[in-house]
Every structure is written in C-alpha cells, then in structure tokens.
Image (cartoon, rainbow, N blue to C red; front, side, top):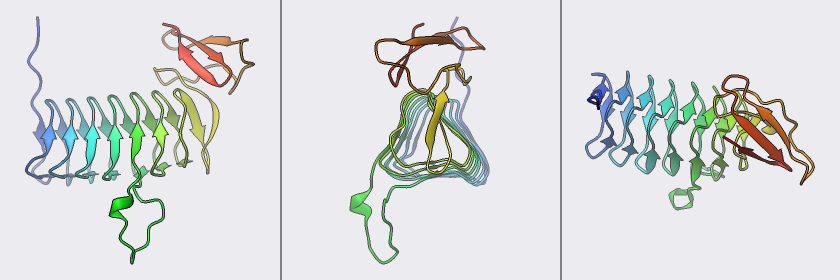
Amino acid sequence: MATAASPTTIHPTALVDEGAQLGEGCRVWHWVHISGGARIGAGCSFGQNVFVGNDVAIGNNVKIQNNVSVYDAVTLEDDVFCGPSMVFTNVFNPRSAVVRKAEYRRTLVQRGATLGANCTIVCGSTVGEYAFVGAGAVVSRDVKPYALMVGVPARQIGWMSRHGERLALPVSAPAGQGVEASCPATGERYRLDGTELSCLD
C-alpha cells in the first residue's frame, strides 16, 4: 500500500524565493537561502547556512550539509552527499574588476557521489557516479565513477562501492585481465578492467 509523502518543512529563518521548485519531503534548516530559479527534487536536506543559486538543478535525496553554497551552473544528481563547508566554484579565473558571468563553467556531480567536508570542486568538472572525494581534497579535473580521490590536487588512490566501502582493488589492472572484488558490507561484486570499474550486480 502506498504511503503519503512527508511534507516539506522550512525553518522560519530560511528564505525560499518565489519560483523555487522543491519536491516533497525536503527539509530546509536555519538561515538557508534558496533562489527562485532552483529546481530541487524530493527528500532533500539543506543544513544551516546553505545557499542555492538560480541556475541549479538538484535531484532526489540529496543531502547538503552546513555552510555549503551551490552556485549557478551546478547540477547534483540523485543521492549526492555534500559534506560540511565543501566548496563549488563557477568561474575559473575570477577577478573582482572583470565581469565573467557569461563564462561560467558547468559542474556535474553524478548519482550517489560523496563530496567530503571542506573539499573543493573546481568548475568545469564532472564527478562520476558513486565517486568519493575525501575531506579537504581539491578536484580540478573529471573524476571517474567509483573513484576514491584525496589530496591537493586530488589524486585517485582506490575505488569505492555504491555502499561507500573501499574495495580491495588496485587503481588499475592490465587491460583484458580484469580483477574482481566484493563490497565488504553488501557483497556486491565489482570488476576492474584497465582503469574502468563496473558493478556486476
């Protein structure tokens, strides 16, 4: 039997501009500002001091922790996690005296990816599905699906399962001689061939 969706709750201190689209069951906490052009799916959570720009698309079940600004030209697909105080950008070479609003570079964070606390995603990058960016890392290029990224600049040190568990795999395997591993939490099986990881289940 279908159950009724929970209502969206908006804290009295939050500002949701007219025109903003929020799906059912969203939670908007203290001092959040959601701009009028934002398109947001169902079941999302916006922690204290979050800002969401106009040209932003957010999928379902996205969790954005405290002190995150999701600027114009950012897209977050379903089930993305944005850790506390992580940073998006939309201009590659900003100058206060030079207007570059026509030069925004788009950022895409694909389904299920995790962006750790205090990490930075430089604009123009795509973070692949279920990738995991560690706390404090600086991502300045595309990230492969399932990749585990750490450091400044961010480098890949391994692979993560959809459940968020590190897989017992090297960063790469000889092409045509793939190796396999299972998620220690769920048992889902993964295969690494070259530098591409796929889920077999």
